[in-house]
Image (cartoon, rainbow, N blue to C red; front, side, top):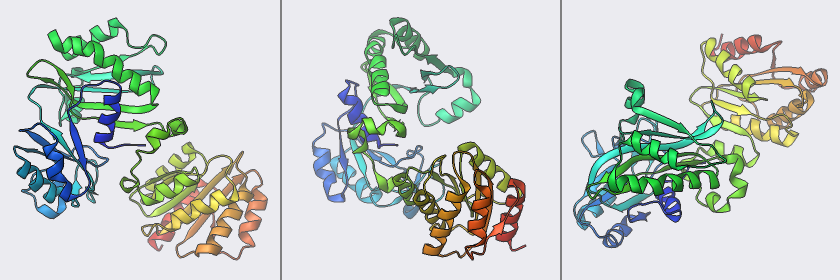
Length: 398
C-alpha cells in the first residue's frame, strides 16, 4: 500500500525526522489560508499522486509549455495561482503512463535553501535477507539515470536486524554521502530514526529523494515516498486509515476485498490462474503468441466458489478484455471449485468474449464435467501451450 508524500512526512516527523512545515490542500479555496500558515517567503506547491517524476511531469490540460507538478512560489498570490492551475488537472509522468493521474491533493510546503541533494532509501535486500540502506550523493530527479549510467555512485549497506543501525553503520553512511560537521551529526540521529520507522511500520520501501544538506549545514527530508507490506496492514490501523483509494485501480480495490492477488495491465486477454508462478508463465506464453495479458490474477491455493466467482466478474468488468483464459493446475485448489465459480459467474454476468479453460490436477474430471454440462460456449484446452494458442487465435478472430 502506498501513501502520499505529505502523509509520509507526517509519519516520519512523528519519529523525529527533520521535515519542513507544510499544509495539505484539497480545495482551491484552501490555498491562501494554507500558505499563510507557513513562514515563507519561499513556498513549494507539490502535486500529491502515487507516482514519481512529478517535477518533470506535464499537465494534460495545460499544454507542453506549462510548469510541472512541483512548483516554487515566492508569494501567497503565486501559491494560489499554482493551486488553481494544478488542482483537478491530470499530471502525466514517466511513472503514470500516458493516461496520467488526476491531482486531487496538493501539499504546500515551506521552502528550503539547498546546498546539496542526496538520495536515501531503505528496502528489503532479498539477496541477503535483511533491510538495507541504498544511498547516493547524486540525489534528485535523475536518480534513475544515475542507477543506470553510473551505478558505482550508489552505495548499499545491509543492516543486521538484531543489532539495528550501529555506530559503524552510521559512519559508513556518512562517508558514502560525504557528510561532515553538523550534517554528519544529523546523520547519526536521522539514520536510526528512518530505520526504526521502516521496521516498526512494516514498510516495504522508504525513499527520501532528495535528502538535502541545507545551506546552514543541517539535513532535511525534502521528499518522502513510503510503501507498506500489505500482508502486515492488519497490525497498523493508523496506516490503513491513510489509504487513498482514488489513486488505485477500481478492479484492484474490488479484488482486495476478496483477498485476490490482482494487478491490472494494458492488454486484452484476461487471465485467471492459481499460483503466482503459473500466472507469470501464463502471461509470458500469451505474449509469446503475439498478444498481451490484461491482468495478473492469482486466485490462490484454497479459493472458494465465491472467490472464484468474484475473480471472474472482475475480469469481465474490464472493457479492454476481449478474451479470457482460465488456467488451473489443481493441487490444493480443486478443479471442480474453479469450474463451479466460472459457471456461476457466467450465469450472473453473461459471457460476451471467448473463454478458454484449461484444467489439470485435483478433481479435473469433475471440473471438466461441470464445464461441459453447463451449456456455456467454452473452448477446452489440453495444456498451457494449447490454451494460449486458442485464446490468442480467438481474440484475433482466426
